[in-house]
Length: 132
Image (cartoon, rainbow, N blue to C red; front, side, top):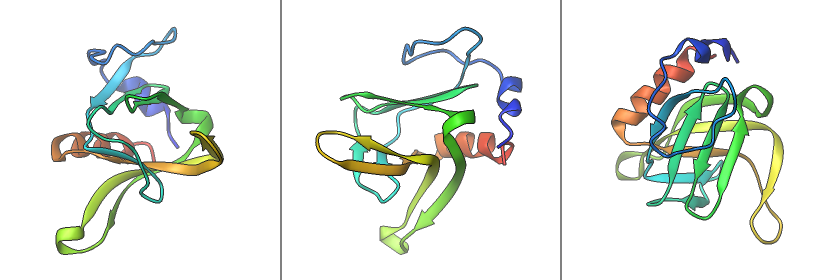
């Protein structure tokens, strides 16, 4: 993935007040209607906030904060579609390079989905289009 492209993007307001590291800037923020595992198990909905910086993706689901280093942890990001007609879903699938354990017990995931509204979907899709 071409993460150098992220450095060229303009800085946005840090509206969800994530803690930034030195040299890091916010390049995308959104409140998706759902944040799920790669298989569709719900991780967050109404309270969810997504921030993408030039280095990380930070997903706050209201219960905890999921932080992913783009260069080290992400294998792929792409727009996906599943289902048909009324059950059709369009989302961004983020695939990780290793399985992650979360929650109480032995719940695992190897990626997650962001279900953005149309405007945010288009903006995020434009970013990842330049990274492939």
